[in-house]
Length: 590
Image (tube, rainbow, N blue to C red):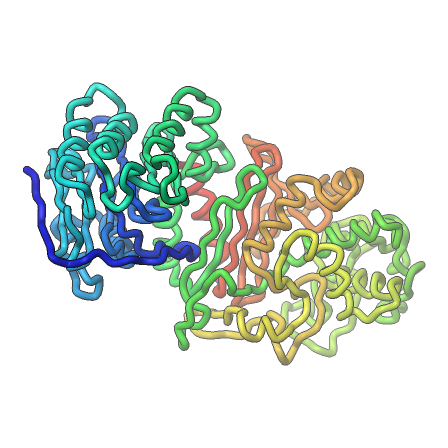
């Protein structure tokens, strides 16, 4: 059945702007949404005379697809996506998207479900521009507005429906091309469209193919023709095809491909089930950040949203960054890993125990110095500000996780540089943060952190925790780094691609230097430790990892150089362990 509507409204001229993660109205013209219920494939194509039409559609893997065009209300589309992810019916999704808050009279919607034998639903608002209409099949729909005439829809429909022997992607491209040949967007004349895209989810690949053409100047080459050339090239080159598919999915440690929408759904579910106020996370594939998300709130009382500017406390993942900095100082000849630190600077806090003269930088960074974690925690595990620093065993002979050793080493480097400990921040910024594009990362408190740092939460309530703050602003080598996932991911990419440090330093950083024994009291398994980094063998290669916890701020990263895969996340709650356990399970089972 062909549905169309004539209106007297003049179409609106709209400047198209780009904002990260939010699609501004595209005033799109013709599109096709479709599923193949036999293969599980889901696809969308579209074309328009606007700068970029690709933001009108969403595919929810294993569920269906939604297109929102004409005024292209982003929030209407996201409402539909949320409902589709929760297995809502076509009718329920469409009714929700027709809520007046989305100005439905200016929208054109298309919705199709994979596991629903009903035909797609299409809605066209009263105020969209002519020619507009749609034609619906059992498993696909063609819809458009501001078209030359109804032939665009009819021809696209016929091209898709008459080629059922071909793959879903091929049929979509044939339909889009038929719409172009019928005249396309009436604003573009013989150019037909300035932008076009195709997105197809293939469950066998576990990924979404996404090709697009945008920004073609007025009067230039037809966008659909250019997109069709891209598509033919993609089909003809298998290696390139696989690379494109991989770009539209996240490759896990064991080679699994996971769609970004599926990861979105997993993270949202985890935040809800674990009652996590906020978090931010980044994934790395092939030395690039391919996924970055910020969710939830910075403070449950103010409800201020977490965004890409939000900073988080890095806790003990500071140790990896500081260890990297130490190796940079070793490369520059400032100190040696195996020279006793007292030869650079004596340490009055432990001078009463001659064994401290055996402690080296290597021992500090591998937690074999003999120092306790913190002197102010007594043997019973309670806070005691008057407790003195002690040595628990002969340095170099055992493992004892220790922040105290990092503080001694920080004092040594500051002494050798002739600066105060807090001034190490400026030196690390120069040597590490700036070259690696780590943004506003800082080991000391500042005005930017005051404005952008997420507040910690513990047991469902705002809790300052042990992170640095305006009242306790000073440099702590073992745990005061404040950063964000993108910045920290850039740091991990540097390690994965051997940037800034010498080959020898990387060998020292990433080889097993010590072994932490099983901790029965805290139910922690034994693990290998390098210099500021944990080392875990696996069936798919060596994983490097570290966690951070300052009570109400927790985080973790893991990466695998052989697989060129990694992630890092930060939360403003205590749920790092549970989230990470569930995340790894999710990544490996998909």
